[in-house]
Amino acid sequence: MKNQKSLPSLSAAQTGGAVYSAGTLAILAVSFFLGILIAVLRQNGRLDENYAATEWWIYLSFLLSPISYATVLAVLFFKTKTKWKTVYRGTKGRYFFYAVLLQFGLFSLSRLNEFFLAFLQNIGFTQVNTQVSVPSLEGWRILPAMLVIAVLPAILEETVFRGVLLGSLKQFGGVFSVLVCGALFALFHQNPAQTIYQFACGCAFALVAYKSGSILPTILSHFLNNALVLLLEKYALSLSSAFFVCSAVALVLALALLLFDKGQERPSSEKEGSKKDFFLYALPGIAVCALIWIAGLFGI
Image (tube, rainbow, N blue to C red; front, side, top):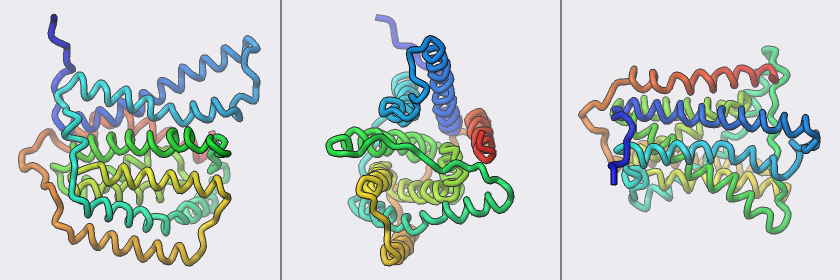
């Protein structure tokens, strides 16, 4: 048997940037070809004009990102020297507690979306769309919705952002890697109204992963965030002022515990690539996300 061909060897910095770009461009490509398919089906009368409100379309829209990231990660793990065991390593139990406490605390920042949206509207951007359609959550249907909206994004997004990206940035120091990882996470979501909150979540998850040396606690935290949003939607619940006060206290406590924690892993003193390498390879993904983010301001 012939040896399996592998991709050209890249430094850690180049790999991190390339994965960000590849994931973003993969989503764009899948969306483009899906758009063509939809147009053809509508032209032939095989698709109703109200297809966007159907269950299958809503599920498909949520699956575009996980499918694209799963494909990119499969190439990364099977065609390069990157080992999945280095991404999904274990850690101390206290970091799972920190992650859950931090996630509870992050809900105190959820109103940042409202403030940022008001700011955007005050400077003239009145077409910002904040509506996100979710599939039916009635009865057993909560299970597939939870899988597609909470489980898959938690695993795949954490693997990409706090696994591969953060792993490639650790060599440049904690503050730099956490802030860059958080910024790219917020930009990836391409939703102007949620930018500040997504940045806070991205930095918080990155801090947990940086200190623990593992993405397992952040997968749990990410899942809990999305799952709670679904449950609030299902049962039409609203969070009380007391909840937000307790959440704010939890946020301060979690950050204090993490900042004073010595951490499980230290970045290697050996540089694998440079910051320039990372941003050069990440530039295509950053450019695409930035253009879509700007288009979102104008409701395009």
